[in-house]
Length: 94
Image (tube, rainbow, N blue to C red; front, side, top):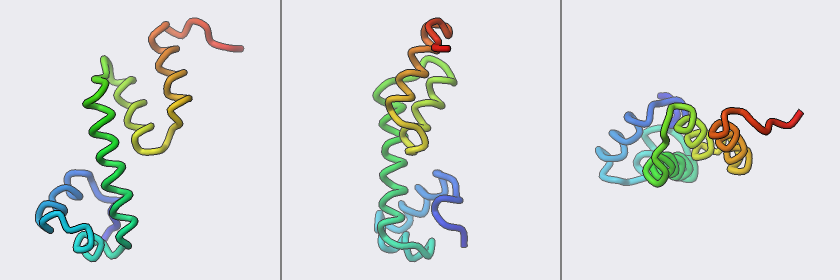
């Protein structure tokens, strides 16, 4: 069985609901530790909050916000990229 990182978010949510919200049972299903499942859930919650709190105006903004929520990009870098995107690339350091 694939681990929680390899599966889709929809599959993860479906398994969580059918396990009645039991992270321990979900960890057993995936064959991983409880902290691994907790981390996956925290990242999923972060993704949802990132999209709900600041509705992106385009696909670029949405992607940057998801990268931050997934821990793949720092918030500082994301702010800089979003600012450059907003300004049409003006003010780029050389």
